[in-house]
Image (cartoon, rainbow, N blue to C red):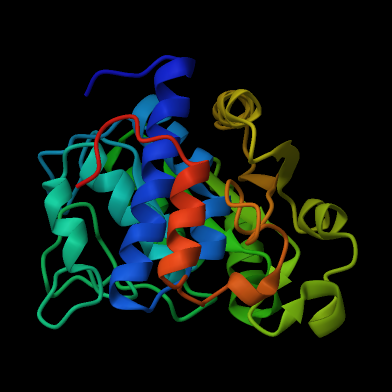
Amino acid sequence: MAQQDLSQLKKTASQVRRDIVRMVHACQSGHPGGSLGCTDFFVALYFKVLNHNPKFNMEGKGEDLFFLSNGHISPVWYSTLARAGYFEAKELATFRFLNSRLQGHPATHEHLPGIRIASGSLGQGLSVALGAAQTKKLDGDKSLIYVLMGDGEQQEGQVWEAAMYAAHNKMDNVIATIDYNGQQIDGPVDKILSLLDLKAKWESFGWIVQEFDGNKMEDVLAGLDKAKALSGKGKPVLNLMKTEMGFGVDYMMGSHKWHGVAPNDEQLQKALDQLEETVGDY
């Protein structure tokens, strides 16, 4: 698909944020906070960085693959996939409704284009991504594997087993990203179970680690470009992506309270007043 320039990417991100709040409001269920915080990352990935084909096939040979580990932020992924041409945007109106392909957490049995694994059971995404990366290596496929995790998710032991495996096996075709917003469902991460020096931890596990601002499109693009340049050097790459939960909607920003709460009618309108309609609402 055609890549977008910086101005177009920012416009698409604004539209995706509108989609997110409208989707969650319509069904009065879902996770707007993390979705809004990660919007720039998803838009940059699908409209600029990934080598992918909206005419979806599960194997994805010759394509870069993306896996979402923190599956509760499905609204941002569904909106991005729709806006990138995987399915019609009008289907976003079915989010979380009975018999919808757009489940609260991504699933595969509905055969929604773009979804390769069911996700939302935290801690599993990196392991799956490594399996795909190993397959690429065995097939001689030079494409890259991307995976997104949450920072609260780093409290899961399986993440660290996978981290060891990746470094030991020199999985240098993997680019993992952590949404580092400092919030999880029960409160600030540092109060629930502190991650301490996360950069030092991942480096000690044998990964190349870089940090960037996930709420500035320019920084996201530069960070992802650098991650690609760092790949293929014998080590897996990790991005610590600093974001703010609820970014773009002032009353949601920075609060764990919007991890999994839907806006009411008045709150929806306040959010939409802050987000420009650029591509057209579904």
